[in-house]
Image (cartoon, rainbow, N blue to C red; front, top):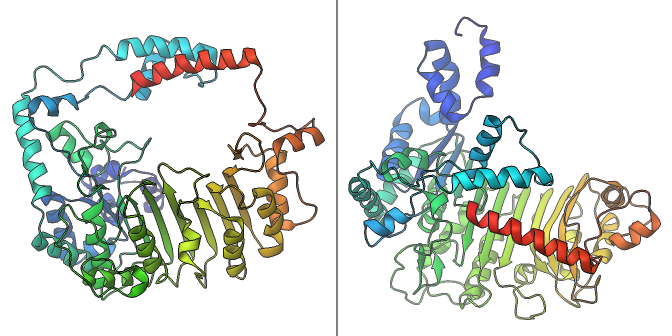
Length: 511
């Protein structure tokens, strides 16, 4: 392979994943030279001693440290188990059912059928019956030894102190070409057990984030917060503030029930701080407030905030969000999500992030993806403040509170406010479209004539489009769209419920 022209080899290397790159790097000098920059371009770490040693080695190397462009800090914490039995309950060494189902179809000479095909249900049920009988744990394994190793790594995270944090921050500061950083935590539908960091730990502890999806051990009941990613976000923000070399321009992280700039498994003793009045006199270490400077040079930011509607620290989240986002004056791309887990759109007590942010303005913002509940006038005013620069707009999983506007009105105003090059809308809750309390518009972007009419209008203007599917279908019977608001006939309800029950039963088994 090393006899091929380097131009061709470079194209091949560009298509390889990280595991393949590491293997190719050990084959010959030519491939080592071509793959090394790609291997170190994106570095993954976790809150483990092994990861700390890894990033310190990279940061101390005269060449490798210059190759790092992106850093992903995996934020999951190992849950605590009282004994080996609790630990063993979470082990599942069976292959993922989706992969097992593909293998089953291949062995039976069946195509991997789409979920809508009736033959899919029969094949899936047969595969599921076999898969559920597979042992979750190899009976030959010495689980006592694995549990001991698990406890050792759990203690590493629990004993993570300021000295280790300082070493980590210095290493991050010694990556001169670092451009992007993120704290990554487990997301539904995104497997991590065999990915970076956790893939190395899996053979040692036999489980990972995919096995902890529904476990509450990582939540501190006395604080009412989720601790996954908590300390890691603080480590990263502090490091970005301390960098004296090239500033990091892209940042991504999410929080759950937490004041995102001060997150730790052990909160310090609170005392009256020097926080400015606009933060509501939060009793938190005032030095944390200086971490806002991590946002000064950001051009790309993905910030997803979620919390319980009845959580008593909601005002802390809103105040901190405002303080930090006001510092991001160089933002060009913003993906901002702000959601209450038990949100009731008929309840006036919910928090509107745009109301909290006030008349915030990002002078060079050209791309915005928004996901939150708000009022029509506040969203329209936000668009007006950015009319000179905003060219790409995505509104996904958004809602307007009852009696505070409609999406039809907002969409009709868009071409009069913005000169867009791209628009995308999906799952917009509208309380005005149905008497039963509202429903979602654009549940799925099908790319048909209905969606194209919305896109064309928002970009080019002209005659306002028909926003509601029922109106569109009446006017365009030859190009109908799915009407998610149309009531089902009695027989349809019964059939739908029966099918749903069967499917749900299977999906529960798969989980």
